[in-house]
Amino acid sequence: MFNEDDKGIRINKYLSDAGKCSRREADRWINEGRVFIDGRAASLGDRVLPGMKVTIDSEKIKPTGRHKYIMLNKPTGIICTADPNEPASVVKFIDHDDRIYPIGRLDKDSEGLLLLTNDGDIVNRILRASEHHEKEYEVVVDKPLTIDFIRKMERGVHILDTVTLPCKLRKTGDRSFNIILTQGLNRQIRRMCEALGYRVRALRRIRIMHLRLGNLKLGQWRNLSPSELAELMRQLEG
Image (cartoon, rainbow, N blue to C red; front, side, top):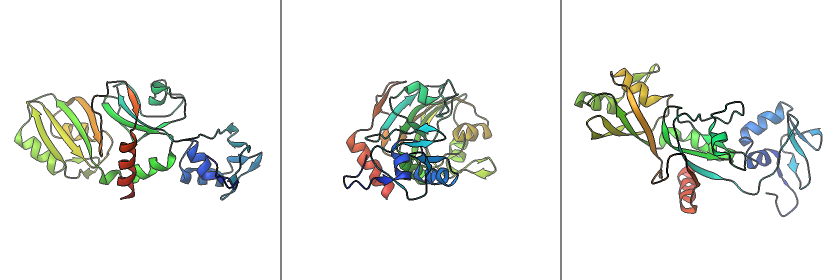
């Protein structure tokens, strides 16, 4: 984690690399006087050297040697939060050795692909670019699909005081379809369906950008492969 020239690393990067927060959040915490290095209040631009003790609100922050990038097939009932007081949190469900947290959200009643990491920088980069990247879902509703329903879903539906962006929808059965969104409004698919008189019976996310759930079983997780990670970084740079 430390530079070989013994100049250390900036305190905001140290906290981000430790999986505690993003660099921007670290800067805010430093300005709020919550971060200490060897017992003194940290300042923006301070560098951490090997052996130094870093704390946030008296909690000692341990450095980590590498970032983790994880793909989970989230079951229903699991909540996308790192809140230690939430017994059904996804962090407790995975029980990883490193401090990790979810990228974005997938509501409690839905299952499927969820990304988690201890890299605070990439979380912000993905969330900032979320309106430009595709997310694909499998959906089952409570009654047969109609041409009118499909057309309205694709053109945009009025929910949450806005009209959803155009999307792609492919019918897969009498009451099922795949939908590709480039938005991430709260419970968006469920709200869109309800606005058109339908109720979602099952919802599963199967893809985020180029990352596909594939044959990963429900409740299981794995690290992203080197090629998956390289392509993710390439797309974020773009």
